[in-house]
Length: 350
Image (cartoon, rainbow, N blue to C red):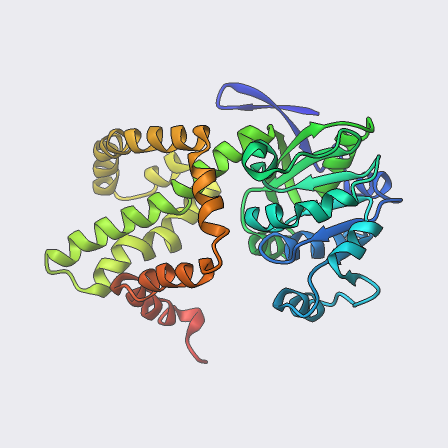
């Protein structure tokens, strides 16, 4: 493995240069990868693996929307698309990509097909880390591995088709065969990772749950809403408030941060913007630090996991979810956003 200096700390990473696709194909040449679940991560990972030359099949409930989606994506019933139990029987590597709640529900079925020497693959450490709550306890004679792309399955697929890669973490919870490392890295390369960095199942889920509730989704929506509401309450129009809150950030500044870093973006903004950003960023850090500490503590205690399990296992979960999403969707800010997106030059009718 390569050693890379990340801000003064050396970490082990696996790059595509040292573990090329040809090596990954050789490692997995006799394996059948059964992807169980075709919702968020399943399509991107499965299609990338197939396009990279691996033997992939899909396991999904028949007569479901996701079965129909798999068919639309080119998976053939009876050849590469099977009911879940049949796919589990055929697979030597089980990619368990159902939702966390779905994994809990289907686990008794999956467990029956985990014969000695197989590999059980996750893209989230939730089920295994919180095993006392989920009941997901893999048998001792299978490899238990994880590849967690740092983004959605949609982004993973889109970047793959663009010839790019999404960074992923990898972890080995259990090495029953002595082949777990080669298997997990080959799969990480196969799904289209840019590079792979080491973690554990526990660290992956702690950082992931914190990130989703924090800067990736929860905190950013809260900050958007607060700034937008302050601007509106001071007489700014919806268009102006949205552009200054969301549009400029996502369309102009964040791409620069992604390409070159925050310091570069600061250096290439106006001196007025530089001064204000440098004066205020620590105030925002100090204001949000207690919230992040509370958040991490709740994740580490398992309270956030239990909230997810309790909520997502309810029969009316989808109905309640739609109500909460409707509140966001129909808010003035995101209605203004829909209008702004329509006005982008690339969305104008020629």
